[in-house]
Amino acid sequence: MQLEGVLKEVFKKIDTIEQRGALAAYIPELAKVDPKQFGVHISTVDQKHFGMGDYNTPFSIQSIAKVLSLIFAYRIVGDDMWKRVGVEPSGTPFNSLVQLEADRGIPRNPFLNAGALVVADILLSHLEHPKDDFIRFVQSMSDNTSIDYSERIAQSEKAVGYRNVALCNFIKSFGQIKNEPEAVLDFYYALCSLEMNCKDLSETFLFLANNGIVVKNNRTILSEAQSKRINALMQTCGFYDESGEFAFKVGLPGKSGVGGGIIAVHPDQYAIAVWSPTLNKKGNSYKGMKFLEEFTTRSELSIF
Ligand code: GLU
Image (cartoon, rainbow, N blue to C red):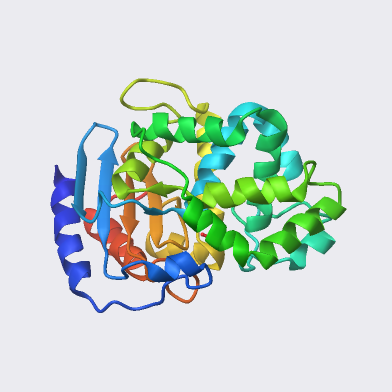
């Protein structure tokens, strides 16, 4: 596989560059992670799977879970989703409150904390056992029944989650959160605490490179049009207020999390997950961004 050769070369190069950036210490448990870990895994639509480094080590996927919860909710409510949450990049930090006042509690997009709280609220309204149903969905997508929430990380975030409490209550004040804020926040922290490794992530997201259909069993997760919309949102809103920069340098739809993970999708080709825990100033994995920039440049495949 040509991509395997490129991945090996680029991994070796990025592995040796100076480790820059900082851990997401605002969540105390994430400050304890060994910053030197680095892993990559690729899964292709022609069923090749290849990883390097710490690709089998589970880590806190944080905001990457916002894509999975969006997909899960989109399957349930369809295009009604877009009545509750917008599809515009915000240009503001992920935990910002500023636009919500003018927008009357409709978050700009589902990958802001505000948007993910609304998606969590939608799931709570439709599911009898939201945490169980969601984890089973993720386990089936990744083919790994050991994937779970981390109570330790969820509690650690909850203990300092003042801004998320403010966001949730603020949206509730506009009537755009239907359940009790405490229940929504509890589910939101659980979603963010999900621990997966690079292999789990690239396997899970591969269906977005295959028009919404799981490659290994032909299961339809989303329609072709819905799958395209999720990729469009990842392209425009997946990297906090560095989404333009990511499109410019890497050129793939993707999503990052403050645990240092990044998932990126090349439609019709592959899904790739990279993890290195230290973050640049915009909150994206320092080495992860460097790796993907180099990988897409050298592999000479582009969606543009
Ligand atoms: N749970 C994190 C928070 O709400 C998610 C941050 C992220 O990965 O963007 O702060």
